[in-house]
Length: 97
Image (tube, rainbow, N blue to C red; front, top):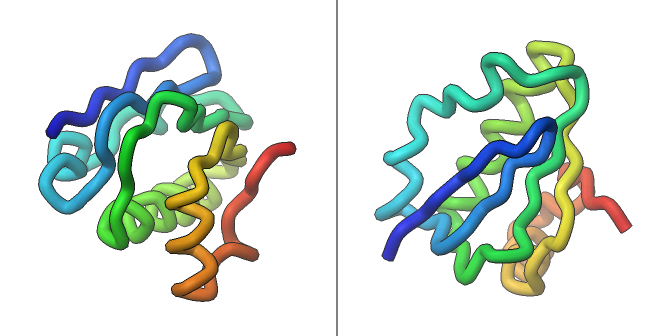
């Protein structure tokens, strides 16, 4: 299981698995340090996410807000939506259409 996050302009492309085993590769998460005022997290190639991955994502949303950076989530997988519903945090996720 691996996680790869590639930056292309203001879009961060997530590939692989975002879970307790892989998220430490991106902790601390430095890709937001030089981000503009708006960043998109593209999950089109995300294969799996667990509750630790969701917690990590919520932490990144909080850190971005502190910096004045907005994050939009695109191509959100059903698994992430289900986890967000079960944990009652879906309203916190800035999901694009």
